[in-house]
Length: 175
Image (cartoon, rainbow, N blue to C red; front, side, top):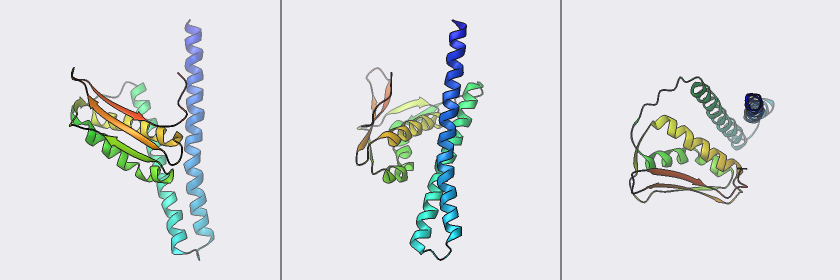
């Protein structure tokens, strides 16, 4: 059993490393291509330069989010994360996260709709929950078909629990 668990852990780490390497290379390649095109053609139109700089900035933001995720995962794995909880309006938090990804949604022609019919307050670590919501939205945006919608539903239950659901029209993930 321990050998199987060890092998599964090793396989998971290898898959994570391969995925992360790919995810880091893609924005780096776009940034490099955009900057190279700017340097190679100084006579480009203002609109062309603006497009290339916007692409580079967008991919730099994406790269920064990826690195932040890796650092946070490393901190969690090392047991160095001390949650700092406080009452948070989940509708406000999810709405702010969705707005920060507007440029990515626009690039993919996907609309993100946040539904929160009432104020839903939960006692959470806002930074960690924000990271989770961003990861969920980025994954949904990555796999959602163009011209589709992603629904974010924030709700509270009578027992005091709260839920945040991200619903997309992508291919889904294996169980």
